[in-house]
Length: 253
Length: 311
Ligand SMILES: Nc1ncnc2c1ncn2[C@@H]1O[C@H](COP(=O)(O)OP(=O)(O)O)[C@@H](O)[C@H]1O
Ligand SMILES: [Mg+2]
Image 1 (spheres, chains in turn brown, blue):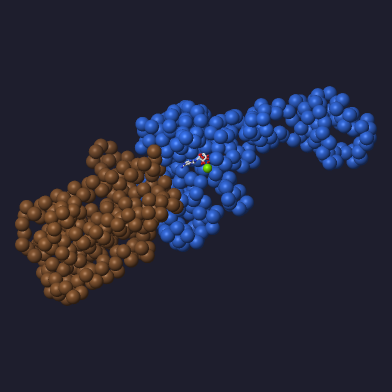
Image 2: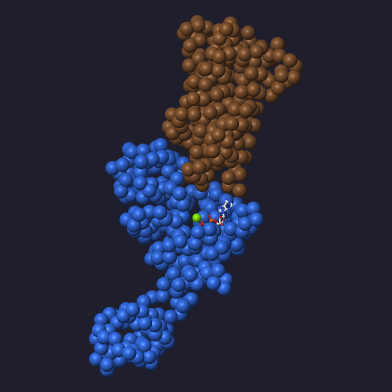
């Protein structure tokens, strides 16, 4: 084994380990039925169900659709991956290898991120090509989307970090995912919501993602608000990664 | 020379259940050490503690000179692990499984492919390298699991019941492989509940029962320690009455048991009994059809040591 010394060496090694685990997960799990179902068809159908008969502006509709696609797609990998790895004992293989629990969690998060990011380009392309919307600040939009997909993926990983079976991860996660969908401002503007719902909305990462993507598409940039969105998403990301790492550590108690 | 593994007063509870109870042992570099015990004795728990998958409730151990509680990260690169269940990725090909295992241990790119090719050949899996592992037989998965455990060239190899559930041919393959790996200098720690396997394969054995080590030492020494006797088995062309009585009179013979057409002479000194036995046959004009010295079996030790108290 090659051993690079020092902090830089350690960080590179952990990152490399995470990327290799992500690569492997991408190879294995992208074609698993629950991943396809929750990642692809599901957001599409839900969205259609709620927007038919409603006339949302494409510039509001598309960023919302992009956000929930990345939300459902990125978050679905965890429940498909971790319980199965625990059951087949391949998780033990990772735990005894010279990679830290954090690198394992990060690797799985990256696999979900890649999936969520790529899938959410589908509604984006539909919007750009068929509905003719433009993206006012594309770089900020991509940044917001990337951060969203990372956070949502870590959310799914956290819910699966202790699960022995997929439903044990999927069910509780969906109990939170669906209400999140409705209070996040995708369908109903936050401004028209009762005060207590709005308070709940601000505890949900999806809310910040929707806001960030809408702002960057519309170009009606309020730098402070965008900064708030990014900061909130980053905070959720760190929280989810940290909690998931701690949960995984319990395996080796 | 430092010991490869030293376990000191290892204790492990699962809730209230005491699975490993103040276990001590030492494995020398370059030996095959057998951890022999019935199901539920605490073998897997011990391996998990030594490889960092579980923390001991009390006590500690050193592996490759490093402490499992303080330096598990150093240990991880030195050891290879073949768990009880073949934990391969069914959805990946044999090749991809090996490459991923090498990546996990940070083996350089050029080495990865070289070793993957080498191990696929050595484990008789080269022709199936591009097949998904899901379709492999139990024996093939076992071989691949061992190959994956070796890909980073560990100096200490842990195998948890490596031949359990395998067909006879695969089991022989695995045992031969363990021997040849050991010849190359790899220290082997293996658990088994097959007495024969421990007897044939291991330089030294520890017998564990209900979490406690009840005997340890070289298989031969264990046998003589517990039984202290050898058995001379003889059969003649004819059987006369009173043979048992006559044989018992031979100098050095402690007891005689008739088993079918054979007689088992129990003795501390087979070399003393043999001339007396041949003299007796000549004197009575009996022709010796077969003559064997039977070793006491490890099984006898095992049964004696792991029997419930009073049983
Ligand atoms: N995760 C666990 N939780 C509770 N009890 C366990 C667990 N793993 C093993 N045990 C118990 O600990 C004892 C030792 O188990 P184990 O080490 O697997 O034995 P062996 O490998 O020798 O068959 C058994 O009684 C077993 O039921
Ligand atoms: Mg076991």
